[in-house]
Each structure stands twice: as structure tokens, then as C-alpha cells.
Length: 377
Image 1 (cartoon, rainbow, N blue to C red):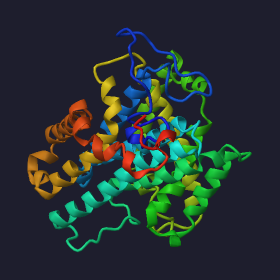
Image 2: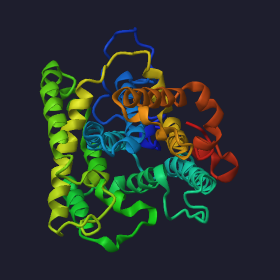
Image 3: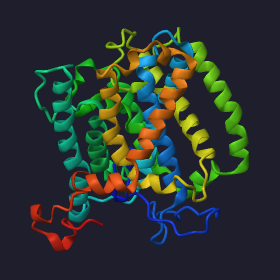
Image 4: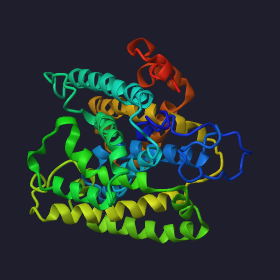
């Protein structure tokens, strides 16, 4: 994904390729810069994207295992508390310099809108084939499964110039998110509830600077992150029978979650604080040097969009029906398989196969080619 048109989980072109020595720590881009550094990929961001997308796969793999397992549900809750906020914050960070120029709007269409249309149709046909909803119509206004994120990214990025004009952008975005939880009539068009409730994370990313990211890479931050993770996992285990973890999905109003209206704004603030702390702790442990999985960070868009077929297909084919799957060994096996599948889907070979639908050039579709519309930058 390009630096100015990258869907987050995938932020496939968000940063440029690294040629630094194997274990050399790389500086982050200077203030005001995007995620690029002199034509090189910044390994830190690629590492964060790969590790984050593996957690996305693990979370989806754990979904059928939640019933009857408090430990799996606690892990599921913990991961969902921060994995999408992580990608949305990174997406906002990579959008700091985005402007609505013709070339950048063209790249936004090619790298976000086109994949959204392609995969919305593909997932609809898959759902029909799997028998879950054989009569489901193809609707570009009702995102199915993973595609909500592409619709949200398109809307967030279009509004990014506005947030640079607002005097207090983060409080304003939080107010919008809180009000969304009070509005059950918003509906599912373009996943608007998620667009509004996840908006503060994107705006926070817009406000971050490289010096802020450097703070979480300090040794003190790594040391502090460990007890925070222990406390978070303990709290998640305690909360399993006491809390509706759907609050971390940010997809429903308080009324839809059978909660009093005032819960919505309160849970919005509580979830935001919790998620941002966990995102910071996660980034504190992301290596800054080039590793064996650094190159895979450039393929997270492919892994994100494609792994849904595997996750849903596994349930359709009855892979979770075996008793041993719900034992500790089976749960570990499922987690490792999910990580392996996601790793395979992020490889350069998969990128080459699917690049025409995730990063199409579309030189034929735009008149102003010299302005960059038809160039795959």
C-alpha cells in the first residue's frame, strides 16, 4: 500500500524497503515526514504490521473456541482490545501528510476502493456458496466481514485534512464516537458505527510524531510493558463472565448491546484509554531491526483480505467439530496454524498473484495520467 493510500492492516506500501545492516536499529522518519526514510522501508513499522496481522489471524481462529474456555475468551478479549486500534493508529500516522490532490485521490481509489469492491463481491459469493446466507445480495453499502475496514479507511483518509484544521481534534473525535454509541439508528451503511467509533484512533495517529513513537522504543517502556501485559491478561480473565467484550468491536450502540445509554460514552472513553495503553505496550516490544519477518510487513494487506476465506472456510468444513481441537493442545495447534497461514499469505509470491486486484495500476481509467492517477507509486 502506498504511504498515502494504504489500508492499515495492510499498510502494504506505507513504508519503503530497508537496506540497513542486519541488526542495526533504524531511526524513524523525521517530524513531518511520512513512514518513509530516504527510499528505505523502516523495519520497525513493517515488524509491527506483521506481528499485528498475526494477532488478527489468531483472534479469528479463536472465535469458535470461546465457548466453554475462559482462557481462550480472555486471550480473545485482550487481542480485540488493541489489535484493530493498533492498525488504525498506524494508518492515521501514515496519513499525516495526506492531501486531496488528484494523484493521491487516484491512489486512494486504486488501493482502497477497488479492493473493497472486489472483496465485497468475493465474500458475498463465498457466503452464498458456504450456505450461511444463500440469498444474500451483493451490496456495496453493507460491508461483509473484513471489508468494513476498507470502507472506513476511505472515509477516514478523506477527512484527514479536516482534522488538521480543527483546534482540538482528538476531543472532537472522541465526542463523535461517544455520540455514535447513543445512536442506534445510524445503521450498517458502510459500517458507519465502526467508522465513527474507531475515528479517535485514526485522529490520534494523525497527531503522533516520530518523537512520540520513539518514547515507546526506550528500554524503560519495554520494562514497564511487561507488568502491564500481566495485569491486562489477569483483568481480561476476571472480566470474561462479567463484561460484554463486544464493546471492543465498536460496531453497536449501547442500546444494541442491551446497556443503559450512559454506558456508551463511558465505555468509549474506557476502551480508548485501555486500547491506547496496550498499543503502546505492544509497540514497545516490536523490534526495530530487520528480522526474518520484516519483509512480510509489506504484504499485510494481502494477508488481511485473504485469510478471511480460510477462517470462514474452516468453520464451514467442520474443522472445529473435533473434540481434541477444544483441548489445550488443540487450541495451541489452531493458533500456530493461523499464524502459519497468515505468514504464507503475506509472502511476495502471494503479493505477485493478487497485486492486480489489491494494487491495480488502472492507467486506462483516469484521464490525467501525468498527474499520477495511472502510476503505481
